[in-house]
Length: 135
Image 1: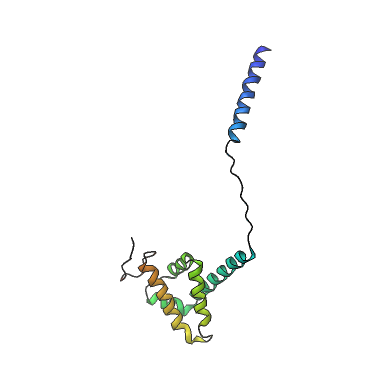
Image 2: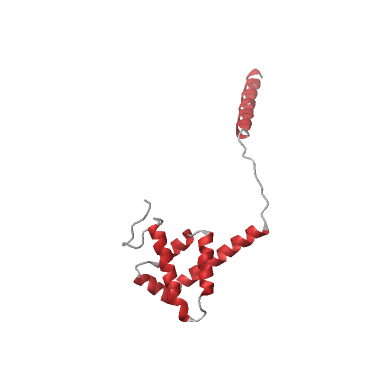
């Protein structure tokens, strides 16, 4: 009986120690209100990114990017790496292009310039003729 009492106290101490050790660090949950503007901006940014990615799926755009030595996967990765402000700027430029096929060349030039700028800034290395500002 005495052995059983010592064993139960030992098990009880282990249980108390394990419960206390599990409850020492409990990170507090933080909840913030999300405004409707933040939700709309997030959805608009995703929509703009999808529009740009859809443009990169077009055959003539892929052909021009290949002519410049940029792979489709590299261009998609660059679009994913753009900030929301840059995506909004590119989407705004796409909205101002003519609806017919007249603005394809200008759109491709714009994409080339964006890729060139990100290459110069050192975010990527697609064009061999650029030297990045930072390393």
